[in-house]
Length: 202
Image (cartoon, rainbow, N blue to C red):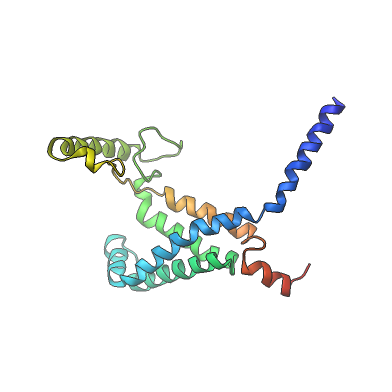
């Protein structure tokens, strides 16, 4: 028994040595999220009138132009900050707020899944009815394409599906941002790291 415990302690020691690479996790989170927010923010600001119309008329949000500017600027500037690893924990807060607003206004009524998964990947999907309806329509679309179109060519780059548009992506991005809020931008490959070393030396 003593040998087993010693072996487990040795293995734990090897595992702990991987902490030397702990900067990789926040770095990869930042690299993953940054282009998503930069593109989304730039798109909102580049088509501000359309964004404001969507926010006001489709989502029923108050002060749609102001909300469009705020959402677009938050995503664009927040995405750039993520690339640089600058004020990451601070920018995570408004970015998380935009994900909450997006989930509540644009996606909540569609349930969890972004796509109509035939087999639920989570037990908390609350719009199973939409999955059934979407899959029914997907089958109809496929049937029409096979009968009247070149289905093989149409699906060479990917299968035909129906966008269910649930909160899945917004919730996933929120969780990733929450991790960055707590752990920060990471060591070495972020401006935050060097700013902290200069002004808050340990």
